[in-house]
Length: 437
Image (cartoon, rainbow, N blue to C red; front, side, top):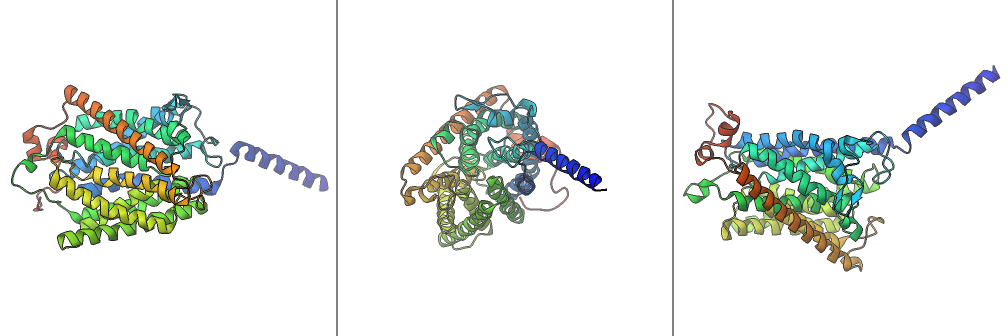
């Protein structure tokens, strides 16, 4: 009887050892949190669709929602086939990853210690896929109401492969910017600056909407839809920022707190500034301010204190509002849904203020910023911001120019007047319903 017990014990030890060997150091809590965060970030892309959709006229709302949804499908495949490898594959010249991981070759249930020792690499891969998906979705607000759907599809695929993937590699995949020491916790440069300046390029290339050259006024058709979209974004952003810790740990809790705090500060900051300027507390303005705060805290979420996050959010809310006023009244650039002013400028503010407020007291794996005695970090952040802006803007202009020559960027004038819902998709969001706009 004793012999049987000993044999059973030995077998159990061997079995547990083999299981431990197969899983390596995989942590179930970290894995669960990152997978849940990936789902939260995925939800943000249709959230962008609703946020933007409420701001366009009813004849174009389906087009915006469809573009957001199609991006999920397009980039999910692109990421598996080449995107993950280009972004996180072995480094080539500090610029891009090679094709070692193309088709997810060698990417499986074991950890890749380069990126995380406690996650299956597949979990890390799919989490990063959601960032690759949402980034081009941000750009669509710039050319709302007027881009051909066929050209849109080609542009998104080329932009993600040639613009997003290299920048992602620079910062998170072991490229030159990470070696320089630039801090970008969850995507201030990788996501928001790259999308914002690319949106500016798109607005310049595609031109102003027909309606802006007449006496008609372009008004949001459903602000309640935009408020729903902003609420989904705020909810999903906890996965965006707190998930970027790649673990269920104290830093995740910290990132969660500063994300919420910055969004709150920015919503109130925007409300107060716009209220003072216009005499009304705009509902759309309040939720847009919150989004700007979420953008600005993104690069700093794992590096700054809660009090610093209030300052970052408050600055972002006020400055982004003033930037929109300037763009609308002092320029002829038709960035339809203010992507550059909100995401581009918000990302720039957040990236630079990371260099001001970052502190090792929050994250020992990062660096101190200006206020903690390290002014060189601000210089590093500025280099990262400038490089991202130049590469994304110039690259987007080249892509858009080529596509304009080959395919044409813009729908015909008559199609723009009718609306993209009918002319590009053959459907209406509100058939037989009397809804203004």
